Length: 102
Image 1 (cartoon, one colour):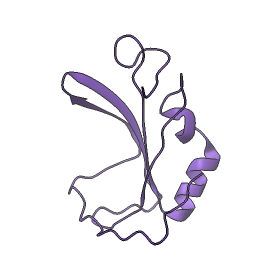
Image 2 (cartoon, one colour):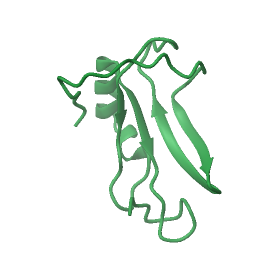
Image 3 (cartoon, rainbow, N blue to C red):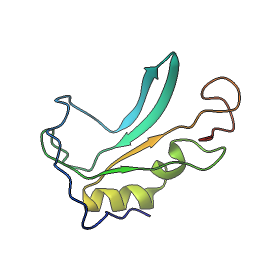
């Protein structure tokens, strides 16, 4: 489930300069507030490049579908991955039930 893409060449980012912590965050764009959860590996240090893994839940799920699974976070921690799990938007107002990516 969590696998790096071998052979990809990318220049590591110097980071955003902000101190991050594992947890739930909100972001608003075009009057729509989105919820996402971030997992940082133990020993995370700002200014050091880490692989980023984006995980997208299934229909009706949320940001905890993957990051609520201890197997996922244990593996991500062992491999030094930063994992971001956004919540899809529902069929009614943003962040309602039955969240999806359509």
